[in-house]
Image 1 (tube, rainbow, N blue to C red):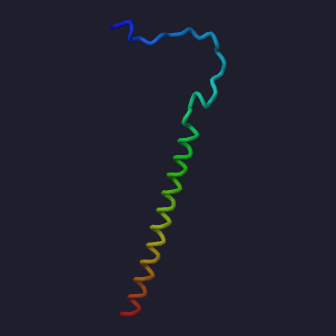
Image 2 (cartoon, rainbow, N blue to C red):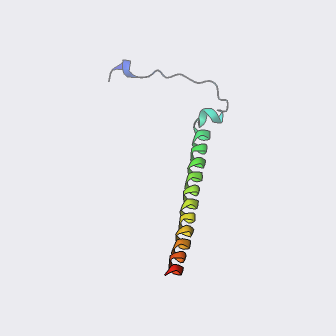
Image 3 (cartoon, one colour):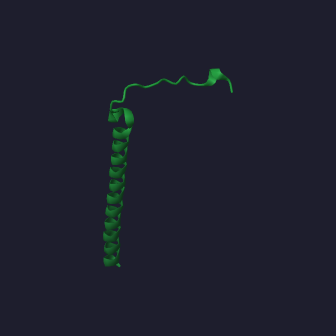
Length: 66
C-alpha cells in the first residue's frame, strides 16, 4: 500500500471530557425530526378517524332516506 494514502496519526495528550455536541452532533436535529414525524403520523390518524366518523354519518343519513 502506498504510504501517501495513509492519514497521519497524532498522539493525544489531552484526556478531557468530550462535549455532547461533538460526540453526537446530530442528536438535537434527529430528535426534532422524529418529533415532527410523530406529529405528522398523529395528524394522519386524526384525519382518518374524522373521515371514518363522517362516512358513518353519511351512511346513517342515506339509510334514513331509504
